[in-house]
Length: 244
Image 1 (spheres, rainbow, N blue to C red):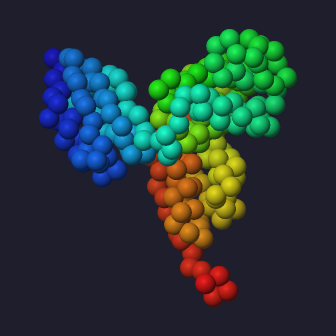
Image 2 (image 1 turned 180 degrees about the vertical axis):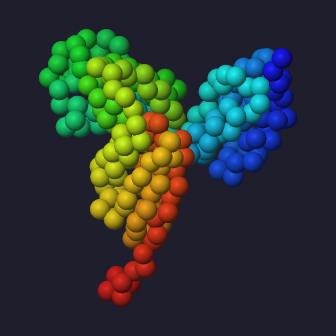
């Protein structure tokens, strides 16, 4: 007979992760046999991913029901989130041949007609963006998720987009997706940052002109589907005398 998990063991696991601040962001836990439900609002996507990793590793926990939400950078209505996401997807050249629908029954966007493939369908409820549809590559799937996370009011992204034909995932695919995110982020100087991935762990090296850019690069990496951890080794370079 397998080990029976306890709420005390789950709480201890969460308390051992410094990115999860249970005082500022309390998390509700419920156990039904070996099924654990985790609910609450955490500070950022890093805290969400790390919290889920921690509780899933508790002996006896076989399934985790994820109801964690991320505190949004800015409070927005679902309609505002849909408008921002629609504009982001419709304005992204990589989705030029895709139909983009922000919710069921809405008009199609792009060259393909409604219901056609490739397509990206998005709905928003309670700040949670749910993505569906079909795209030609893992890169497209990850880019759609990134754009959804970049909407300031987004509290979670459920990425159910299918890739057709199916592609094998790899560390190189994740690395390419993180590089693309850094290149598309106007707040980051991607030319000065190196990216490497091993087993879902992304390492960022190089330099940034400010702590804000260093943090922005790390946030971008966390937004990529398949990234479980981020090791941020970016150094903040001192200002030249002319910049002081």
